[in-house]
Length: 117
Image (spheres, rainbow, N blue to C red):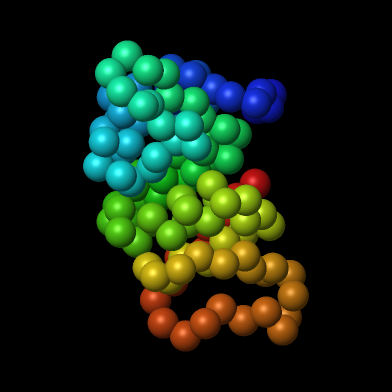
């Protein structure tokens, strides 16, 4: 993805592989709020590259059948700039994980390992 400073809702939806209406719905319910939210009717929303990555992650995990509440920490982590090869979601938090580090064991419990790139 060629990185720009801001993406329109249409561009963000296309890059994330979701429909405009899904992205619009996610904002309306507070599931994925763009960095620059609309400040009234007719005002444009602006998405950063991190917002687009978060939307792409949300779409992929939702397609696997994961509940929005389980995915939300991953969305927030990606929007805040958490980077790495993969991310662990445990339904409460998200944290980077190095799968090639034998000392980096996932925490106990149910979790999802997500490859970011």
